[in-house]
Image (cartoon, rainbow, N blue to C red; front, side):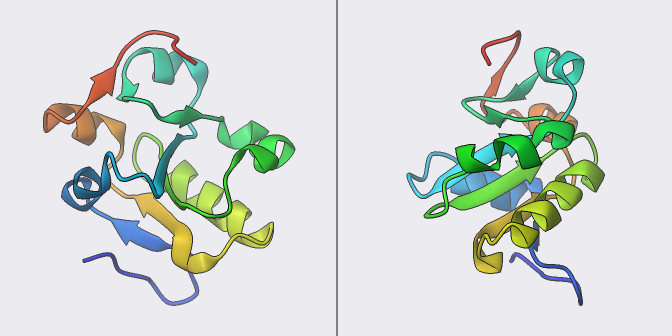
Length: 117
């Protein structure tokens, strides 16, 4: 079950919880890692916006869907979720996939490789 730590404007998800949401029309996965990390493997059909570029591209994030942010280990994705909250996105639609992309890949979830950005 998604959980929220005190003071965080988003929910934390496990890989299993995120995988259950994969393919839902109301969900967008957002990969906030560096381009070299993205090319090495990413959640299939994820929106790719580095955390450094997020504020400048914030309008690319839909406001009417759940946003599941992912990075390597949950740090940058947590920051991205906080940034989205600060820019007016509803907290109940913001999620951080804590375990990161490698755990997603290791568990056999839908993955793409290369620069299909």
